[in-house]
Length: 148
Image 1: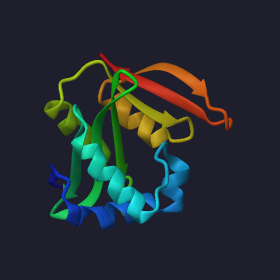
Image 2: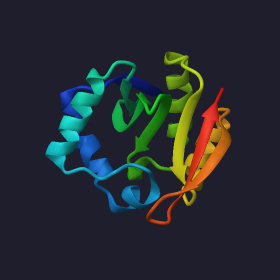
Image 3: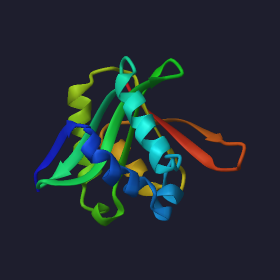
Image 4: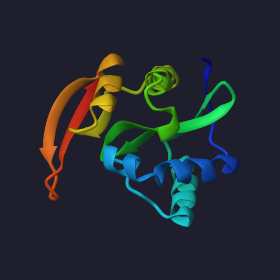
């Protein structure tokens, strides 16, 4: 399996939007669902933000997801989304390792909901440690991981 991170281009956005539109992905992550037009605009704006690095994740020539390093609330954060058809293959772990080679910003934070055990394992495998837990206003337990 060959995993490659590439610059996100406009041609990637429809596929990435379809991934984030999947109800299981919405339920499993800390990724807000966005309608297609809003999603496209969000991705274009994010690419322009100073300190942001966005990459599409390609496996053996197939677009499988995206990964972003961004600066929010005074900290560097890492977020990723793998399309449901590609879950369970170790793609996120490889993509996170590759992004951590591209961005040496530390500390780096990763956030996931408590129920998303797979995402917790990805972060832990990359060396992130649980920093703190927060119960959001809607009752969802959110884990904040940090890599120093």
